[in-house]
Length: 381
Image 1 (cartoon, helix red, strand yellow):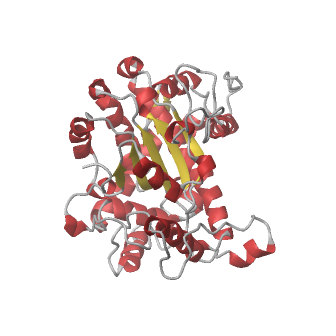
Image 2 (cartoon, helix red, strand yellow):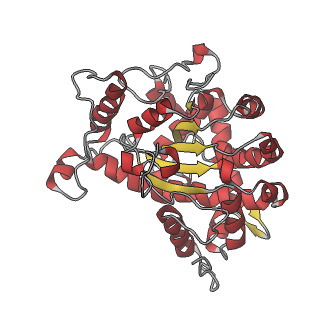
């Protein structure tokens, strides 16, 4: 079971990645571009009915494609999903505030963010993967399970909205700018091949088994490498790394939390994850997985890799992260080591509520910038 790629029906293309890729690749139909155009045209000649506010980088076609993938390229179902999301963005409520724009412009709910960070220690942006994807880090086994069962639903709804909007409006645009500066799709493919080659200790298609560095943004080399003409060529996905150390069967009590978050993110911010790494999976994970799996679409299941502790887990992380970016709690520590190896303090800590990693600080700063309320200052140190 462990260290496998999870998938449903093999006919849907839920296979392990090829030698030229570290991640599972969705099997788009040959005529996917025409299908995107067909759905796009249902929202006006230029897709103008789709609010730009729900489109990362202000690009509507990549958003249409993400919704199509979420509905297996079934045009009618994808159209309904987009229209439902458009309505949801106008009607979702947190307290007595209704609509995404009003929620972000209103008084920040620092109380809900505080509780959510105790329940799910995380960092919305930890680093960039070698392949260019932004990395979202979580430590579910270190959260406050008792608080998870008592926190109101609006806690998880609000925090999912803040996370989804920040990802779409800040993280994805920044990652896309960096991605294009590093050569766009061509440069990414070379880096993905290089990282994948390391798994076989050699080369793939003549590419050395080392990650090609991205040219610094703003340089002549970066400008020459940039490919900004293709609106579909965005870095609009993230790599999610979930550490389960410390988790047990009591996590089943928190299943409704996952359902709530999935109902917000899965339906209204679909297909924003490239891969999901589940690490330090305990012996009880099979039971937990049996409860969670039915809630996930088959194409989402195919993105998930599950590991127990050990060299294989660390090697998998080295394929996607620089050693200095791998958290200390996921890095093998030599006996007698003075200071820990790896990145220290990568996520929030329910036992140290004032600890905020850089990614959390950046999110909080963005929350303040979106608010028009006079009492919007962040109370966290």
